[in-house]
Image (cartoon, rainbow, N blue to C red; front, side, top):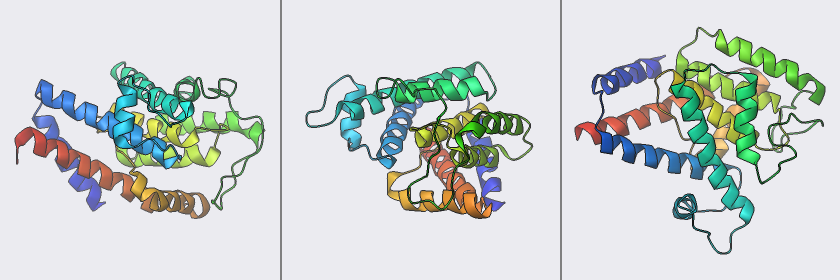
Amino acid sequence: MMKFNELDTLKAQYDALRPLPEHTVKSLHEKLVLDWTYNSNAIEGNTLTLKETKVVLEGITVGGKLMREHFEAINHKEAIDFVEDIVSQKDPLSESLIKSIHHLVLKQIDDKNAGAYRKQNVLISGAEHRPPEHFKVPDEIQQLVESYNNSNLHPLESAARLHVDFVKIHPFIDGNGRTARLLMNFELMRNGLLPVVIQVKDRLAYYEALDTAHTTNDYSLFIDMVASEEVATLKMCLELITGE
C-alpha cells in the first residue's frame, strides 16, 4: 500500500533523528496523552472539553461534570502509563494484558465488571454486527492473542486489525472502545510506531469503517484511517523536531 511506503519513509526519518531532544519529546508526549485521552473518552460520550480534561489530569475537579467523567479521564491516563510501561518491558500481547488495561479503564466506575469478561449477550448500538455469545468470549480472545502474536503483516495493519477484531468480540460489558484503542496503540508502540488518536470529529467515519470490517470482512477503510493518522502524527513530530 502507498500509505505504508510513506509511513515507513517517515518512520525512518524520525528514527534517524534519535536521540530526540528531551524537552521536545516531553511536550510531544504530553500533547499526545491529552489528545488521546480527550478524544477516546469523547467518542464514548464523555462531555469534558480538551481543556477540562487537561485540568482533571492535573488533579482539579471541574464543576458541573459527573464524577464518572473525571474517573474516565484519570483512568485513561493511568492506562496509557501502564501500556507504555509494558511496551518498555517488551512484553507481547496477552489475555492478562487485555484484562489489566480494561480494569484500569473501568476502575472506580464499574469495579464489578472491571477486567471481567461479560456474562451476558449484547448488541452494539447502531451496528449491524452482533458480537458472539458470552460463553465464546474466552476462546475467541485466546485465538485473537495467538493470531496477532504470530502476525506477519505490516505492524500498522496488524494493530488496526487487532482493534477491529477485538471490538468484534466485544468481550466486556463496557469500555470496549477505549480498551481497543489502547490495545491498537500498544501494538503500534511496541513496533516502534507512534500512538494514533482517532478524532472525535471523525466518530461517524470510524464507526462506519468498523462496521464495514465486521460485516463484509473489508478492513481497508479502517486500516486507511489509522495509517492516515499515523502519517499525520509522524509529520507533526518531524516538523516540531526539525523546524521544517
